[in-house]
Length: 152
Image 1: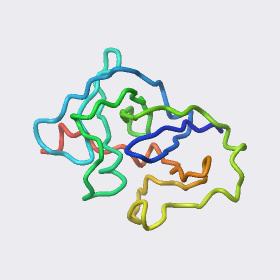
Image 2 (image 1 turned 90 degrees about the vertical axis):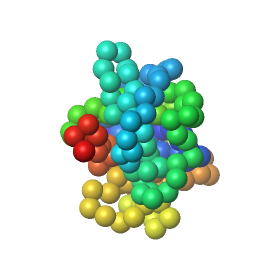
Image 3 (image 1 turned 60 degrees about the horizontal axis):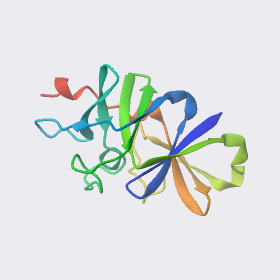
């Protein structure tokens, strides 16, 4: 299995490569007319409008994100989860790496108390060391939120 590594809000994150449909550049975020954490808004990739997940709000409810609709983020990942596609805006994609190239002792299962709350549907599968930094391996099926248009 390969992982797609990316940066967002000062952190390094990873998703299983099979869940990343494409990386799009120069997408424009359309904020929602009403607050709906953890959704940043919608982005258009090709002919489709996708919900853009706010990673900071999803991983740490109640925390203010470093980025926001006003922040230009140059790349957007289109991610396929169990409930359908969604988007994550990122600072940059670092590339792909085979999971076998990461030493087993570099992994810690689950998120630590500083990463995210412990809860059912936790989006963090594991953390691991990557070039002397810590990266969070995310579960694409646990990142997706309900359609914000239906949450009124």
